[in-house]
Image (cartoon, rainbow, N blue to C red; front, top):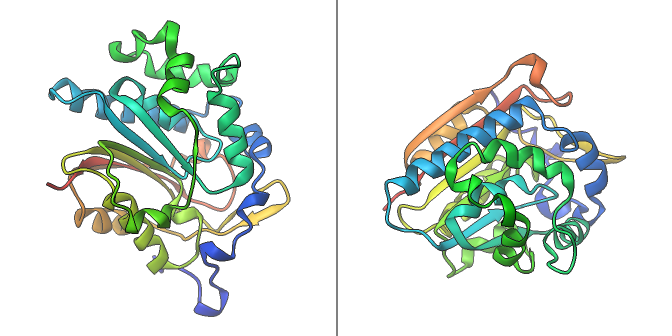
Length: 262
């Protein structure tokens, strides 16, 4: 697979009107009803984190979801394992949505996220949080944090657990910028930190409402090669059932789970 368009057609992250990203439109298309592919991803991430912490004495650390967007399920997947969770997001509208979902003065996150929790609660560590999951998420997150993936490259902060779902390949058409983005995510994970990342395979770009957003068409080979420089024990799962595709213009989804190199 040739990665990226000709230079004249490239669109960089800084060129994108991220504040025009409409979370309501995105949720309506992707998350009001749980998709089979998201259920598979969430099950694998749940098991990855549970297996790691079941064999570890380290709990109660910090987690980060990079480029959270209007998606709560990565944060929910980290919930039993973290005292604090950073939701890093650039788009102003997405930040407003995230604030509404973790505001302790309200009723907690919207009911459609309970479908995703049902997948997680099949593991005991999640089920023990059933009655307090909404309050627990609000307490762990506090206030979502404005910021870009690329801000992390120069950061001295570190986290013990990390997720990045459909971000680095969905903000640019430039291969070098994609690789830099993955490196920025890995930069802020502590040695040995478990992580889960997901990528749209072969994406040609996407629309949210009437607004078009760029993407880089990555494949399993690129993801595997890139992560090998940063991570150990990486498992990669490609999900490309035509009946599970949620939109046109991509060929599948790639989930990569592993641990940051020591």
